[in-house]
Length: 344
Image (tube, rainbow, N blue to C red):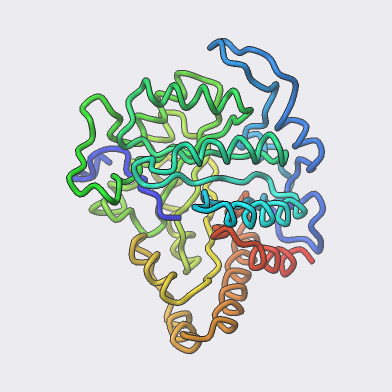
């Protein structure tokens, strides 16, 4: 939801179907049972000498096989044991909705690397969901990336979201090592050449904060796609027209992979304003007025968040998007209510 997606220096311009009345197959054309059997299979040894599970499902295959929009969910590694227990309750709740896949974020500078990798493997292996590991490249050398990919592959994880990422928040003097990756397209190319993974990326409907303009941003995005990125998920946006306009511009720029909208149900007024500031996200006038109205009222804020996100999702599905990625903030009630509103 707050990904750094720049892929090269940003100082130059060289940078389906309508909703149905029930969840059914349209939630994910690959049914839950068969998808889980593909997510976790028999063990073996791959060409890199790594013990792995057979035939884990690639997210690009899920989108390609779908007969309707795919819903997916994002989580982040908790900090405490109690929060872990709560998260796994959330995941089990959302598993009942038959998501196409779920994803796990990694902190700035890879600060949650071990937790992210372990959690991604655990969800894949023990809960049986197709899981994607977020992978920011800042601070990582090819050797380090290769070791992490081996670990993911040995745990039946086949999907990664390749990001540039941000430097560690607690290190203002951080300098990226000379041998480390600088941009996401370099990471995408490295993973694609290695093989064994479906690679996703990120995009910014309202222009990445580090890009000087949309043209530069789209050139950088196309570099990632040309390097091997098979689909992209957007940062949060609150005005669907921003996404629609971006999608048109991306297609005109030759970006032909699936573009998946990322939606965040509003959980708090201060929180959404802070995240919007980080992501260069604008507020429609109607929503701005509603936020002023509910500020300080948790129940009213929750209701507004569900209502606004439901309306966004419904219009996006009507538009024909291949799927919607919901930023859950590790909570299930809003996502479950949105799903019910959409599919009954």
